[in-house]
Length: 192
Image 1 (cartoon, helix red, strand yellow):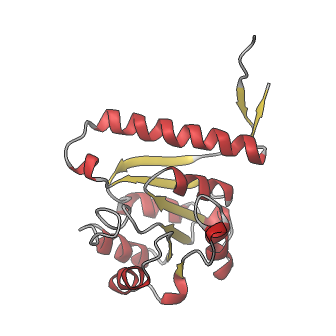
Image 2: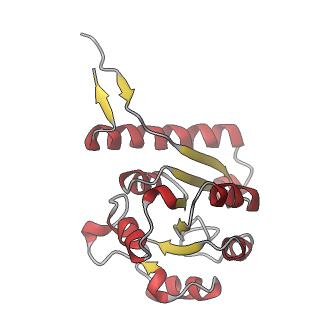
């Protein structure tokens, strides 16, 4: 029996996988390419772990976004209201730019919150750069039409010296597998 193959239709992806948050240079590069909005996850992206403290880079990241005249919106599945809004306050992000699921059907990896976030500032996916820590974030970004993203390796495994190459391969595999499944579902990839 022949195994199915996969073919990507026209799709431009710019997904960086690295330790920590995107650099000032990467943000400036995306701004030069027309990006106006940065959508970011909170847990294990801006914090060192789920429901943890802000990572040392998070405030600098938010300041760099502001210095580049970009808008920052936070999108999270975290249901701890006090925690989420304290992170937003620490980063000078107003409450109306924090998006949380209003029902179980809005949780990432569905694109609903990300689409609401972009719509709130009337910014298209082509002018949006997204930052997350893993597969559910990337799937949500792709399903929302965003093609520029950064996957941050802020997990305890990454911080504790887990071999970078192995960690990136694991992240690429998980993201790739989930992206293929999503691509099949929404028609970006076809079986032959």
